[in-house]
Structures are given as C-alpha cells and as structure tokens.
Length: 408
Image 1 (cartoon, rainbow, N blue to C red):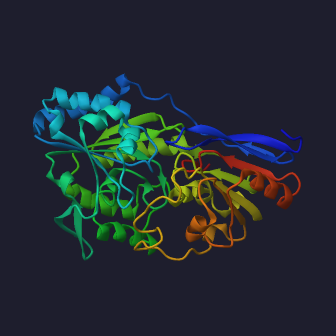
Image 2 (cartoon, one colour; image 1 turned 180 degrees about the horizontal axis):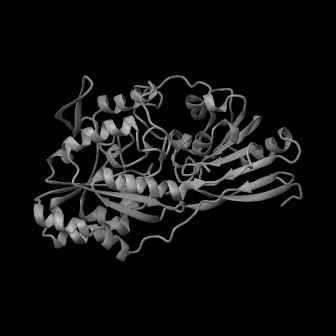
Image 3 (spheres, one colour; image 1 turned 45 degrees about the horizontal axis):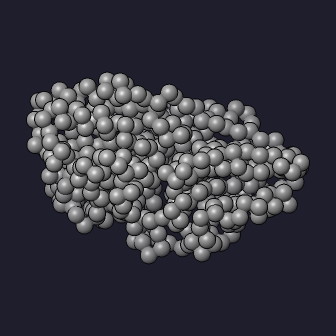
C-alpha cells in the first residue's frame, strides 16, 4: 500500500460470493468505522422452540394444503436451515410433499430462476417442492377495496387452507421495517394495488423509517391482510453477515412488532458527538444486488438527518450491483411510476459519488440525476478522493448501511 493511502474493508456481493472488498482512502483522513453488532446465529434447537406453537395450530386445523410465502433475493437472508425444521413439523402433522407450495412474494420484482430459488431456500427444497413466482396477473379479488381500488391477491395464496409467511426484517423508509403484512401487500398483490402502495407514499401517506407503531401505511395494509388471512408468521432478524440472529413467530402483527423491536436494537448505531463528518461512506451491503436497491444504502443518512455530513461535505455510496440495474416494474425506465431522475432532497448542499463496477453510466443516469458523479473503476474513485478532498477529513464508514439506523 502506498504511504498516502489507508485500507478499509467492507462486505461485498450478497448472494454472489459474499466477500470482503478493499478500498484505499487518503491516509490523512480520520476514519470512524461503525461496525454492526452481531448475535450468535440461531441453531436448530432455537428454531424448533420458536415453532412449537405451529404444531398445536396444525393439529387443530388439519389443513389439506399449505402455502409458504417467502421474500426474494432483494431481502438478504438464507432460509434453508429454518425451512428444514419447518418442513419436518409440517410433515409430522400429516402433510405430504405435494400439499405444500412455496410462493415468492415479488411484488413487481423480477421472477427467480431455479438457481435463484436454490440460493434462498436450498437446492434440495427446490428439487422436491413446487416453487412459484408471484405474478401480478395471477390474482383474485378478496372482496375488499383500498379507497376505490379493488384488492386482488395471488390466487395460489388465497387457495391454500393454511397460510405461512416468512420474511426478513430490514429498515424500510415508509413501512418502518420490511416484512409482515407487507409480504402480502404489495408482495402478493396485483399491479393496481402495488402501484397504490407506492403512490400513497409519494403523496405523503407514509410512516417513519424504523417505526412500525403509529405507522399509517402499515396499519392500512395490516387491516387488509387480516381480512385476506395469514395463519402463521415467521419474522426473521438477520445479522450483517446474513445469518439468522433470531426469529419471532405467531400472529403476524404481534410477532412483527417484536421482531421489529429486536431489529431496531441490533441495527442501531450510536455516533455520539462525532457528527457532522466531512465525508461519509455508505456501503449498501447486504442489499447490494442491484442498482434499483442501492438507495437502501442511504439508511444511516436518512435516519440521522442532514447533520450527519457537513454542508459542502461528500457522500459516497458503494454497491456491488452484482445483477446490474435490476428490475422493478414500477420504477425502472418504462415502469408505471418511473420519472426522469431529480436531485435527492437530503443530498442538497453535499457532493455525491456513486461507485459500482457492475453497471455502466447509462444505467446509473437513468435512475440518478446527472449532477452526481458515477465511477466504476476503483482507482478513479481513489484518485478523485485524493484530489478533491484536502486535509484530515473526518470520515464515517457504514459497512452495512442498508441495515444501520443512526440514533442515540
């Protein structure tokens, strides 16, 4: 390493090698590296203990068919170990392999290939069980409306006698945390309802980042999902390395609340009186699969507010974008809610630099305003930082930025 540079490492490429990526920053910079707390991952015994209440429910209900709704690769937790225990319980209750289906709650994200499904569920499960991607056209009305919009939900989900939802919880800008009822609406809804959820947010019908109580958006979808039906919920809190820190089970509202509180404690980062910084580096891992998810890396800045970085300071966002631009039926170019990119309000008065080696400028500027700097070569990023930021810049690094909530 050259004498005028110092090395930092951040996690990189969720679902794609999951490795460390090195960055070299000016040696004069004073760096605060805010790591993420980690809990010992749950073992089989803990999972079995948390699923005990499911046994009695299955015994009482004796369902003939079960749907297990799960999230996709944009939600970064591997479910294989959890599912092995869950499936054993289902089979011990008398259910056969052909009576169980897995359903990926995609909303308008791209469908998963068999290889993708195996990453999420495990290859053996994908070989043995029917695994389906949700599609916005495979929906049926539930006889309820959201305002004037008919609520339509995936027909496979509606047809099952017993409905199980498994979802990871990550900080979410308007739902507080992902998961829970959000797995059904918008995850398993038709295009009109998916669009309505996002329009409601854009019009100010939204809650607070990391807050699920007194959240109007979440209360609305929970009321609708209660009418749709959700028999057993498994909320997954994940560590930064994508292992399962803990699970919370039972009623989908009560268990999600408990999971959200645990996630909030685990993801909270205290910066004391160190702010404002001259530079912040936000690494989007573990939600770094695609450009359309990269804004999740702004979570520390959104939660802390503009005082995290000085006026005239620099915000650097890094993301592997292993799948390139990615896919979102609403917000990608040509999508129903796509609009030409505008300057981001919370970046006003700050320089913004985005680095990813797996996209090209044309893709970046379809989603981000042209006043921002995009770089795909690491040496150009390092050269830019050396030349544009002088002196002993006080710098904060958030290696798991899509999880990290700044608070005191």
